[in-house]
Length: 290
Image (cartoon, rainbow, N blue to C red):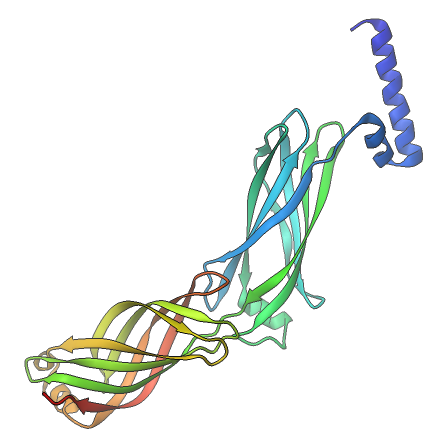
C-alpha cells in the first residue's frame, strides 16, 4: 500500500467518525458498507417438564455477514405474562459464528413453577399461560464493536397438574393361598387444560396396608383436555401365603382400602411430561366365575 492510499484511507476513517458524530453510527455503517449480524428465534421447545419445573429451550439462528468469525458474548432475557415478569437474567455464550454463514444456538432456561405461581397469582396448576420473551443477543462485531441484537417471541407454556386417580374395582380370576391374580380397573382424570397421552405408568399398589404389586405398564391412552377420563387395567399377581394369613383373609373379602403411588409418563403438545400419581380410597373385589 503506497502513501497516497494510506492517506486516503485515514481520511476516510476520519470522515466516517465525523459522520458518526453528526448523523449517527447507522449512517457510518451505510456509508462504509457495513452490515449487521442477524438473529432470530426459529424455535421454542420444552424438556424435563415436571410438577416443579420445566426447561425452555430457545433456538436462535445467527447470521454472520463478515469475512471473519463472529464471537458471541452473552444473551439477556426477560419473560413476562400479561405485563408481569416471571423470569429474567443474563447468560454467557461461548463460541463463534463462522465467517459468512449461519448457525443455530440453543439457549436453555429453567423455569421453577413455584416462582411463577407466586408472581402470577391467578394461575393454577393445570393452566396454559401466555408469555412474551424479550431477549438481547450480544456479539463482538469487527470494526463496529459490541452489538446487541434484539429478539422477541410470544407463545404459551404449560403449568402441569397431576391426574386424579381412582381404583374402581379389582377382579380376581385366581384366588388361593399360594397364588392370587387378577386385574385392577383404574380410572384416571386429566386435570390439565391441555390433552395428554399416557405412554408409561409406573406404580406400587397396597391393599389393606400390604403391598401387593409394584411394576410398570407401557400403553398409549389419550386423555382429553380439562377433565378427560380414561380407564386402564393393571395386571397383578402375588403369593398371599408370603404376606400372611391376614392378607389372605383380606383379599377374599368384599373389598379393602387401597394406596396407589407411581408416575405417569405422558406426551403432550408441549413435549413429554412426567407426572406423579397418587390414589387413596376403598375399592371392591369381584370374583370372576370360571
